[in-house]
Image (cartoon, rainbow, N blue to C red; front, side, top):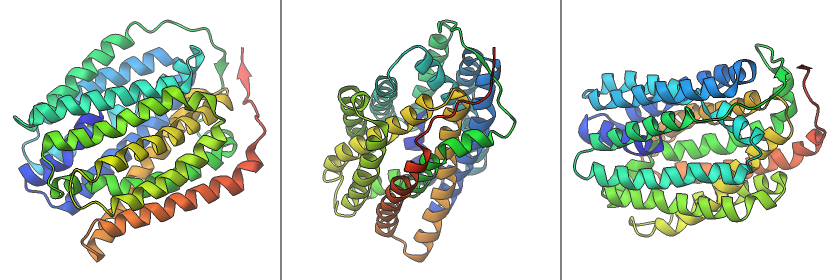
Length: 356
């Protein structure tokens, strides 16, 4: 999934001739589709079971990412990307819930995603050096493997959870972390909207772009495996917010592609702390774990809708990457303050109504 994400903006601008504003719209539309499906299928995972939702998500994603090979105009790319966004929003909530109920530590669970991102991005970057469409072929192959693996997931005994169509109680119980993540991640997504273009303008070729992304994932894996499962989720979220602010400011100091690499290790540390902390927050405090995890994914997806809008606004006013990065640093501090002030009001775990 993330292998394709890295090279979509490069395809749109450098191959299909789209401008930065179209890239922002493309990223936002993808995220909007993911937002809706994460909400719908997160709830479905609690009602109908985790395995069927995970398997459906990977099967549909494999097909939708394969359609990227046919995207030869900006208009076709837009349609295919919206379908892809809806597809990849199907499985994350149910998959996280299944992992938790399999007694898997959330840090270790998340670390596999980071390994996949790093390895997939390196391979996709190598493939894109021959033809950028080969990067999307790699994504489809990996998703097909994921679907095959999902067919082996064991059945787990679990209580049937009543989840209303609009899970207001779940939102209230977790609003502290949802709002903090929304604040930080929406500003970060403003950076990621034009991030591949920023790296290209720093002198990076497709493989060097992949090296930058992989250095981030290496740091994530190390931190997720070695630290995050040993630390309280509240501290993880706070550290993730503050270290994000430092990282985003650091980006503004880079003058070439090599100088950006050290900051990626701090970025990996920041995201590992924040993401695992948020995952632990929603899985440990909620019985309707698929819904709560799906809402976390929806929060990140809506952040990816808001981010491109802010990127487009800031880039229109100041056609440079630095204002976007400074904005993200500021909003990460705001996210920290939101969680710090509001989280004390949400310390009590309240289980939702269950049906045996």
